[in-house]
Image (cartoon, rainbow, N blue to C red; front, side):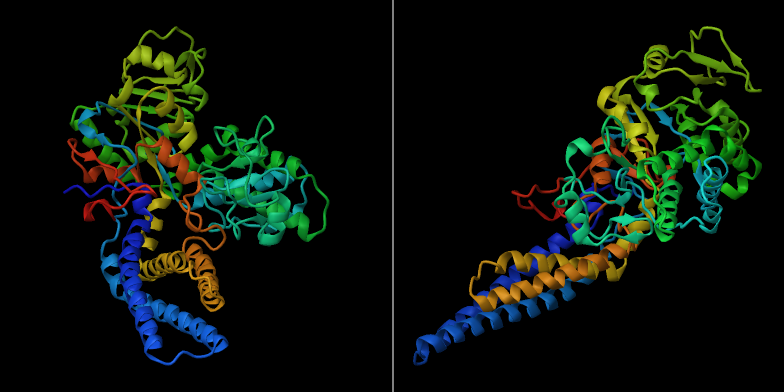
Amino acid sequence: MATLSAPLSCLLTQGKATLLCRHVLKASHQHFRAVSSGRSGLLSRQSLPTRTDSAASVCSSSAESLWSVYKQTKRDTEDVTPSVSNASADPDAIFANNEMCLRDIEVYGFDYDYTLAFYSRHLHTLIFNIARDILIGKHRYPEALRDYEYIPNFAVRGLHYDVQKALLMKIDAFHYIQLGTVYRGLHAVPDEEVVAMYDGCHVPLDIMSDFYGKSSHGHSMKQFMDIFSLPEMSLLSCVNDFFMKHNIDYEPVHLYKDVKEAIRDVHVKGIMYRAVEADVGKYICYGEQSHAVVKKLYEHGKKMFLITNSPFDFVDRGMNYIVGRDWRDLFDVVIVQADKPAFFNDRRKPFRRVTDRGALLWDRIHKLEKGQIYKQGNLYEFLRLTGWRGSKVLYFGDHIYSDLADLTLKHGWRTGAIIPELRKEIKIMNTEVYVRTVSWMQALTGLIQQMQVHGDPAAQAVVEEWKREREAMRPHAKEMFNPQFGSLFRTYHNPTYFSRRLSRFADIYMASISCLLNYDFGHTFFPRRTPLQHESPLGRGQSC
């Protein structure tokens, strides 16, 4: 039976908490009116005190009423929370940003790395160690850097790095920095210092990363969207930490370029590829699920193609392990070293055929044949030779920009984002401690919103105390996902910049390609109609 799909905003539990908040606050508002009217009636039946005593009495009465509502709201939240906890999200579901029916999909395309091939934690350690050694050997960085090891849980994908200031940070969908997530080296930067450096928390558009997340043409921010970028962020932070700890002067821009070049060498010079090929079992996992997906598509007569930036020997070794030696018989077209995202925009690069031994043939390509391997080329020639156009094509990839953005914006393909981090985040969101924390935080936010209209000093003092409680809870909710940067998908309350791009460029998204096994080919993915800020829920079916 197919699992239910849901949009990003619903996935992140805010809908559940909002529904609970509405329910609780309605009851609390009625409770507040009852308490207030009871007190006013009591005052009217008693002899009136002096003006000074009256003001103090009313203020005290107002504060007591607010605290009474607060306690009632907390009790109601605790009572309703178990029912919210039971409505947990499925980590193996496919979530929809845009309505899409699998019956309309005739052609399935795939990236390779982190789409068909999933890697173990050993790969990031390998990349970090090789790049660190390149910095020391090639760029003459201090030998003492070898004391630094890869920190698996330090960074999350989607972070921005200010190249000129050497700061790693999380930015929300509205270009605001999430305070408490700005790091110089391995240490957090105080909020006051961040505000002083950026004259607030907003990052202007002209210094944000470019369309593909790169820092170029005057953009001083780089966004790390690739899963392979986690070791790069860790290495940047470690080298910055070393220089600061030893009071060494350095130029942040040059440091960034050196680390970037070292990471690039790990890939371009084939160091990582050779290491993985030598011990596939150590570095590649999730093989059986990818094989099952490919086999299911093949048996149902679907066309399939592979477009990857990785070289043929590396892909062939991995696919033999994941799918089997007959993997090339299952795919109608295989393109390696495609150079995405340039592949989707360049009209000049021709396709070249690659032999089984890796030799490049220079004959003009008039047809993309099954069982053959092609190198480079461009999407426009691909479309001309295959005729696979528009919404009948669904392409899966893990990189929001390099894999998906151009396809959905320029060519009308349907797109599926593979987000391996999703499974872990959903499991955290399904825990009772997370549901209780977020539910009470949402209820408290609603309480502040409703009760801030009471202008007497005592009431305002109560509301300010609630605000402090709310501020103290937010870091706790953040740290459940990652102690430094929190969730991949949310700042304290807004979607992250990563979430914004995901919702724009991916029709559907999931933790693994294996999630497709939970659905038949007639399934339609519906995004829920989440109410806009000025709309009210139309019924239970419209809320999470």
